[in-house]
Length: 367
Image (cartoon, rainbow, N blue to C red; front, side, top):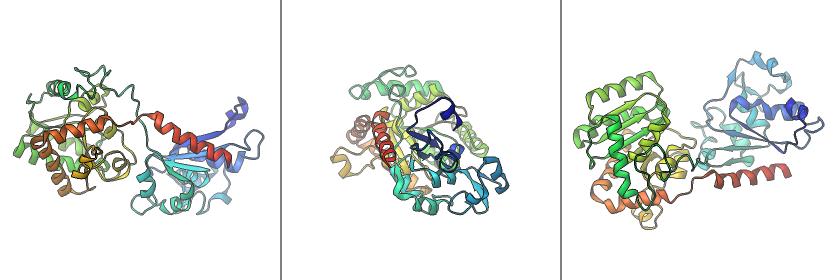
């Protein structure tokens, strides 16, 4: 905040993100707005995941430089504690979150994590704007990590080569006609990884399906997945790390990408999957529902179907939906190929999202 003055910056909008920067809209409103050079600065606060709120002991308030008169239920106080996410929500001129569906969800109990009333109160200035992806970095035509680059015209020819390379890299048996399910994720209950671990044995033993999982996180989940990889070495591979190269190989080589999240503010991998012609299977929640169109006869016929929806936190729905997806893969290859092509036609670039942000910035500046 001081640097604006020291450097003589001409600022129209301060755009803050999550609880770590939640005090900045409060500083602008309480401490700076009447100072020369700050009078017309608008603030916008983006919520990426409302479950992480930056909650601290109330006696830490003096460390912020803000007076106790602002430690009230309609400002900084949260059940007797100091909440920095709430500071951003209550003091920002505008608020965004990372998908339209999530903007609705965080106004309800269960998704708002105690801030649902604050979100309802600020809803007139709340917007859900989807994240974008870097289409230079995530582009199967130019990807340096994949063995056979391709586009929508060559995907059906080249993607099997990427699948073979992925199977080889991970030590899976090289069977081109066996469905390969990919996961790239934090290994956390939020992401539904425990649900995936629960269903793997059934699909491996009954149908020979292969699974590959990349990520780090919950130790118990890592142990469960490691045991499954040890039990089914030709069908299950896990890598407990963050690897950009392997993430790209999975997106290019997998047939089906699993994201059965319990909640998902936006998600990126379902977008990467569509770009790479990998069919996403996702929960009907948040940004997943906004970016994947559920497969049905109607959506297939009108050319909008791009993947499959599963009910959040429902093991039976996950099994049923995997069956729907793999039945399409095995028995209706024309429909499966149409899903691939539909996904690859989507535009997930930041250029499209930037226009929405600019329009919101301009509205806030005018106010």
